[in-house]
Length: 166
Image 1 (cartoon, rainbow, N blue to C red):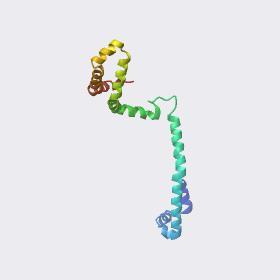
Image 2: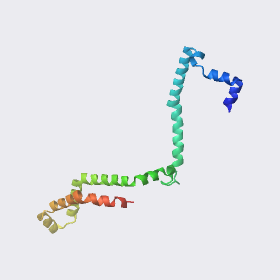
Image 3: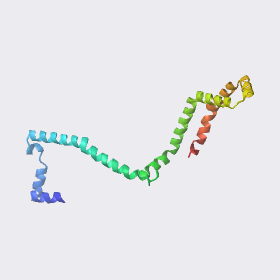
Image 4: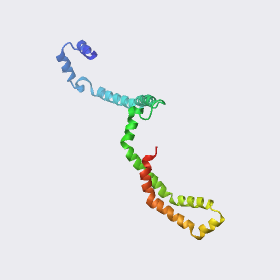
């Protein structure tokens, strides 16, 4: 609206306006002026990007997060439901990832688990039971049981149970 008003004031004739618009900058300005305009535009753009845009973006992000991270909002309603949608779309992938990480963790900690089980069993045995335990090779039996549990059973157990965690 304002542009048309300005055009009508400056150029009473549309043809004159079109002729002026179609002229090259070099026909209107000298080379030094064009170079100065380029440099000033570059400087202004850099300043805008490095300072003004940073402040503007920071304010926008801060305001957005303040609105979206509100104690009255649920995970399902925050960010217009984007978190819930993402979780819903990726629930099985997340479950598989968690299961895989748990399996890796248990397998990596197998020796620690053996030591823990052996110590707990030993703590709960009386003198005669400890003698029988040692005579029968109790630590080796326990170690073999933990090996079977971790190497053959834990993966299926975790995969079956990972989606029951709530």
